[in-house]
Amino acid sequence: MEIGPLTTRAVLTIDADDSLRDAAVGMVERGVGSAVVCVDGKPVGIVTDRDVMRAYAQGPDGGVKNVADYLSRRLLTAPPTMSVREAAQIMRDRGFRHLVVVDGAGALVGVFSMRDLVVGLLQELQARATA
Image 1 (cartoon, rainbow, N blue to C red):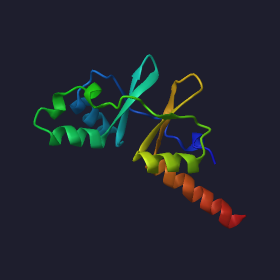
Image 2: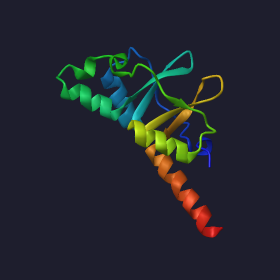
Image 3: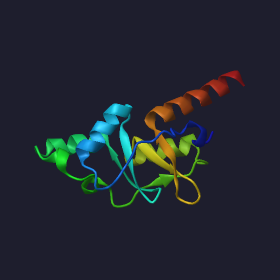
């Protein structure tokens, strides 16, 4: 099974110069655990609820810092054709709870999250049980 059909397409996107507070407010309002930073429609980073908590834990000015201060140096992306098992292995090995999914041109398709992973694994189990 590929991750494409399971990928969440309604993604919260933000600018790198947005504050972490803005990112946190957006995540709470949308009920999501991440926001993708895009430049010209292409993802360059991701900020998660854990990044926001880390910033606030470091001091009272955490919320006013820019999202760019908390982005990893190199964003790992996945194609929609990646298998659920491969995505699970990457997420486990790298400690990720979200994978940014892009098309062949590098444009944002969506985010594959732990929630999407559970749905995919359950669908695979159900398919095996009925086969």
